[in-house]
Image (cartoon, rainbow over all chains, first blue to last red; front, side, top):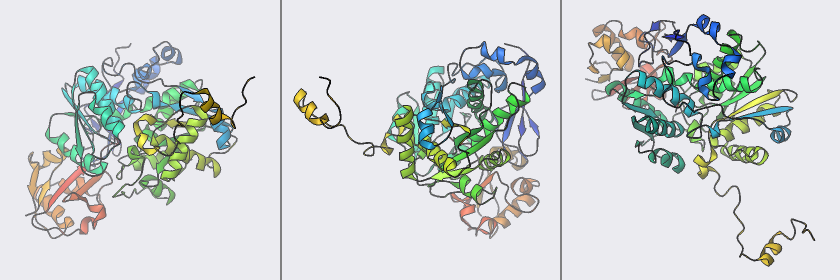
Amino acid sequence: MSKKPFFNNLKCRECGRLYEKEAIHICEFDFGPLEAAYDYDAIRSVLTRELIESRPQTMWRYRELLPIDGEPTVGTQVGFTPLVKADRLAKALGIRELWIKNDSVNYPTLSFKDRVVSVALSRARELGFEVVACASTGNLANSVAANAANAGLKSYVLIPSNLEQGKVLGSLVYGTNVIGIKGPYDQVNRLCSEIAGKYGWGFVNVNLRPYYAEGSKTMGFEIAEQLGWKLPRHTVACMASGSLLTKIHKAYKEFIDLGIVEQSDFTIHGAQASGCSPISTAFKAGSEMVKPVQNPDTIAKSLAIGTPADGYYAIRSMKETGGSCEDCSDEEIVEGIKLLAETTGIFAETAGGVTVACAKKLIETGKIPKDESAVLCITGHGLKTQEAIIGKVGEPRVIGASLREFEALVADEVNVKS
Amino acid sequence: MPTVRIPTPLRKLTNNHEEVVASGATLGAVLDELNATFPGLGERIVDENGVIRRFVNIFVNDEDVRFLQEKETPIKEADVISIVPAIAGG
């Protein structure tokens, strides 16, 4: 790969001040988030569809657009998850064409967080960190723990103490240090913000956030490539902090600016759970002021962030692209999980249920016109949030190992071949 | 006097102190005194209209002041005020 520097600085998203590419995440002057700044002219001169296609099918095939200096050293196998054409779900939702970007099978920890962690930990190594950490609603903790284990980095993951069993075990197994915090995620966040300032740790979503956040762009790059180097007309993404949605937007814009895809109309829609919907509430009220939710209450725990750091930017992305925002109840989340599973064979976690349930509303209300095409971003695997559907998807019917008993059981359901 | 916890990016302005003290009956008054002691600190936290900046979270004893009375939040002697930047999801 080229030795030219493509990634030069961090830049305040609010005031544009430039900073050195260190382990810092906010502007000293206005607290605006710092973002990676690239030399797009240098990238344009080397990056082509052909070059990308010649590389291994991982998220690192878009390496020039990711903020590290050298070659990636953590998570080199991450990404390039399937984009699945979902004809049966399209029919169920009454839309002409529907695709599922299936990050529930992302490697190695079955959520889109492997994308962000791969970048954050590769950068953490470049910056010399030996201990890495995160504040997490579960998926990020799993990914930090697993990728740090593989890289030989010591890790601490801080999570709300009431998370799903699958997400807790899915961190503990890697030998990380799991610390449960009494209180909602926003309290975990606040504590981590203070810890990050005190210890010399690389907190992937605090002082490494500018690097971390860019990893989400690869979901957008892959969608465009997998559609045959075209942007989807509509994209639906779930929102916790709102970062993923804004980065998918950025990915599409970068591909247009670099001439990797042709300019075309695209619209990005956001999905939240009604039990914690600060972004959706502000959007529906026509406001850019995101009022925090003090006590989130939803089965979609991975989306239960009451103070979404990128809520403001997510609203701007949705407005700029003509998008909409929806939210849904716990019952609708479970129905969304079941509908996705029964029509596509994909088992999503609760956040995926949110995406499907909100997409259904967006289609029903014409926000996504029925004669157009949409991509739904499914961000995590259902095995991690089994509690949400226990008792809601039926039970096995138990019989003895007897042909007679079996035949009695299915007599009304099937015809026996004679 | 109330204690104010200063986030890393602002410590250049507080001679690297991570905790400082400042008096005042309300959060706004405490911020004003902080700005008098450490010139320039105030404008980092509130914008030109006197409103707490979009990306700044301020907590009084672990409670977000947006759930209290923002700058009018009453402050007591033993209170701990934390200034915390917004951080990304997880």
